[in-house]
Image (tube, rainbow, N blue to C red; front, side, top):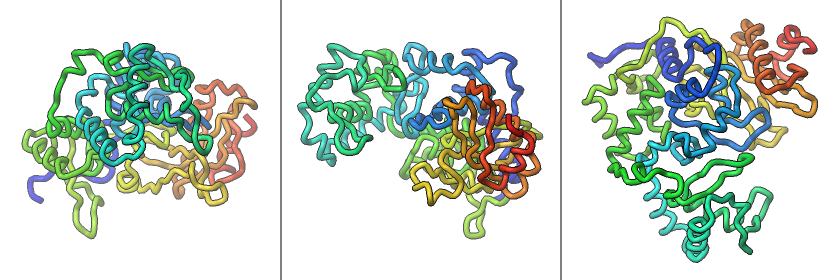
Length: 405
């Protein structure tokens, strides 16, 4: 592998964290400009409905900037007029509206697949047409605002009505777009009602779109394998390798060999983006959302940080190893522990329901972890402070530092 840049594992971690916005001087005041700069760096924010600590899309910005006014982010994300919209670039995410044309190929592929294979779509053409007409006349609308005899949930409590089902298919196909949210309920509109015409009219061929998305992923990740970069926007198939080769030929991707990144005793091919910074050190600390890009791709997380991470929300309580909503704890360039957090608003406290160290790393950093928890409680407006429940090997040391606060 002559001619390939060599990186230590620690250098790769620092490069990746710097690309994601860690290790920078925290701003004294956090306004719209700081939020937008961070959003531009990440490109997308994953949306998740779990609200036991805080909804996931708020957390990556808190991890990188510190306590900020969530209402500012709501105004940016929940109104398409501010330049952001929802789609499925990774899973359901907020993204800049100018990325819309880069996913037309995905929208078309979903439509072709669902029309050909999905029984609900084949049997409910009249419902889809009715929804198109209803949104044209009355949109934007939340699913709950649409009056129809089929707007009744089916099955368990999380089951969708036919109205919601139809809206989601139209959303996947790009006919319908998000027009913001009210009390976190998505509002639907025809794409022409919310996506500017100059953006809708842009046509990007599928190979060009995949290449540009892979390039953007490399910018956001700094360094990684082909699988790492592809997962950022859930790109699949042989076109991804072709796009990587084209980006390497263009100089956007620079081949690297990272110490310890091996499979079956052989180095895993990897690249860095040509503009990726390599800071001498990373000084930072954060509680990471389970859906933060730093820990999105679990094999990357394990390779990069030596951290085995699986979310246990859907695991029955008796079978959970670490807890329900477990946030990895990042200090400098290491993940040193994990904490199961709950914002207990009735009691006015932040509950660390279980606290675990990664080996001895967390035990050496108890004071810093305690300050992260205090900061999170302040950001959540929980005036009762932090309560450390007794579960986990880091609970007693944290309780000794935090006490009854």
